[in-house]
Image (tube, rainbow, N blue to C red; front, side, top):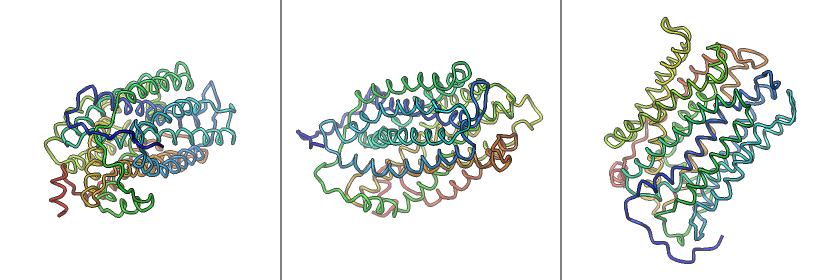
Length: 450
């Protein structure tokens, strides 16, 4: 790509609400795609209905989803590395996003059009190929967008504000996709549901792309280390490793929650698919409603301590979910609506805090090397998060297969998935013990003795 024709002058003015809103529209689009895909793709391919037969065996779906995510994860640091090295008049990030958005839309819609109406290896091959393009284009938008966050502002409070508004918009998108999507799935089928939400995500994402600009960039003429050297150096940092293991484990429970709700609704609760909208809509609404609380806590207390409290609360909630249907009060639906939010609401805080922590890790890298490589750190986040997503697919389909040779979902299988969520969060909490970075570069410099 061509080098910039004129020198970039960073902006030191405070961010406007419009700039923050436009930047976070990409997150709105991602939450549309993620919520639809993870809530329904497994259910769609392994559940026979009056409209279609079972498309792929349960364990094979798990292998395809997890294998695709692992392959996808390996591309994240590469995209981040290339984005850091890119020099164009439009900046380092936007060219990748512009090219990737249309591919993301097309591949997302094609996921829901298997070629054979029945269990077939052709459906498995088709899903694998379509997901390959979906995951690549997803990375092409996500990593440059993430990497733009520290370039939007150097101020910790402003970064927390960006992340908080982003979570609120993301929760609103997930609320639309989780609530209305469940109804559309039942009434119109998977393809029309995906087409409607795919177009919404594409249009909103493009609007945000044209309204967002990088406000700060490092010297683009400075020497950039080699790709593998940059990855090796990043992972050698103990703080990065502690965060990476923790976030891989904890965030995969969000995907598991999305995937298990349709099965919980139809198997444990004995309701129709569209009723998933009630549960998903409630918990996602509450995740967004408490964003001001997380903004307050993250502004008042260290992010590392708030994050640990979030994980502990999630563990308690997931253990409670194991007993849905067994409590001596209310119907199973009432129990689900009371208990699941205990695990789900803290996830809003997790998504609010995580981008700020990655920005702190970027500051640490700059303090140690003198070079600022935002996209590498966000690429590392992408790698571990997607490895977690891969494990979530294997956990769900593996548990179902353990309790039924044909992989048929069961009440006990749904219960065990909740239990697995709690255990995985506990491991994440233990991995996060060594993390100690501050919320500002100066505080981190003091804590780390730099």
